[in-house]
Image: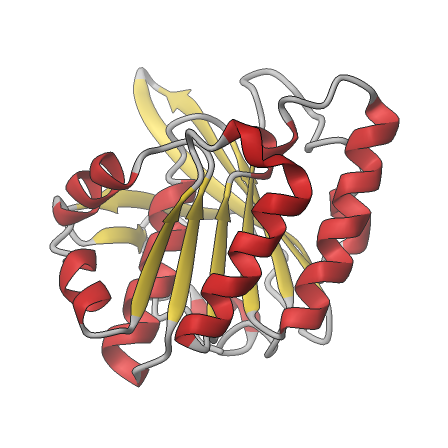
Length: 223
């Protein structure tokens, strides 16, 4: 399943494996949500593949406004039945099972091919015990394998930290992409590394990219 992010698919043998679960981990400002939204948008507009964007950290109104900056009219795609935004940013009372039920219902409603969960960090935030977080991760993995979508799960990595999520996700997902921000000669530099991609002979290089008016763009001159 191609992402259609310019120049990226060549690093993963033309796309993600069907029904795989990809963990997209990275620093604040690295463009994780942009990458994921671009994945849904391109699939809908190029191949008419339906998608669901589950947001635990941003309201629907805010998400629509931010995505429109890249020319991605999610509201139009929603009206056409190609995209559905599921805003769970303020539904704290539903609980884990309630949220999973809502996600499953929405996936069935649009017969989704692509799914984004933004973010697993926000989803697990109310859980205090590490054991509860690990249980939820395993539960979510089994749940996603049953629904049959190609899924991007977003995980936040604080600046200066080497830890990805609860240190469980990276072992059970099918793919892991790490997006990092740093400064080089006083300028902001964004890089990504494909640390894992099952069934794929993926690139082992550090990939330099930029966030442009059109979304994520690999920087050929600097990679």
